[in-house]
Amino acid sequence: MDDDSNHPGGPVSGRPTRRWPEEIGLAVGFLTRLPWPGALPPDRPLMDAAWAFPVAGVAVGLAAAAGWWLADGLGLPATVAAVVAVAASALATGALHEDGLADMADGFGGGRDAEAKRRIMRDSHIGSYGVLALVLVTAAKLAVLAAFPDAGTAAAALVAAHALGRAAIPALAWWQPPSAADGSGRAAGRP
Image (tube, rainbow, N blue to C red; front, side, top):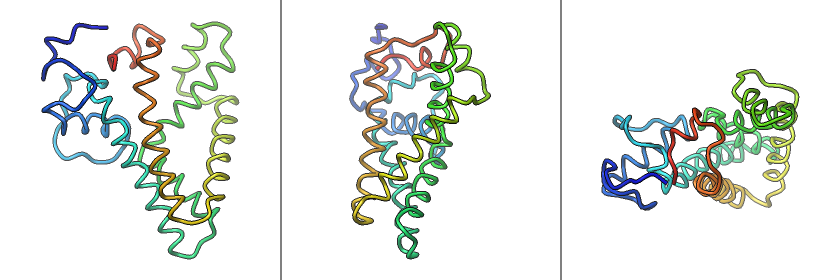
């Protein structure tokens, strides 16, 4: 791990620092398309804000829950409310995670070795493995959401799932090294 004693704002501890609004802004700015008031510092590694990833997840979960509540309030069936909620979360994130899932499925489905997998994942086109992964995961999300007994349970599950999903990112980044020396994972730093 890099020596962070000269890090802007002091050593990185994995907890909020005195620059916590900036850290929340980094997390929200990277993990969502939601607006953030004020400028974000270009000189801080993303993982300085690792503690705030679940906060960004709560924001996305609230956007999805608002979509659910809107559809439910209009008297639409649970399946339609689930579609609206999933669409709201994709809009809130710019489909960042769906894009990553499709890239990973294409790379691991079509790549014969590590270099081929990385090359495929960096290609902006989506392949059959990526399409299939998106269809299956989206169908699973819709089925689970539509099965909740009421809107309150669905909304709580959406907020919790998005927060927990973002909380897993720093844990995985700590556990596994970046896959490429020149990728965005390396630039993000280590949590």
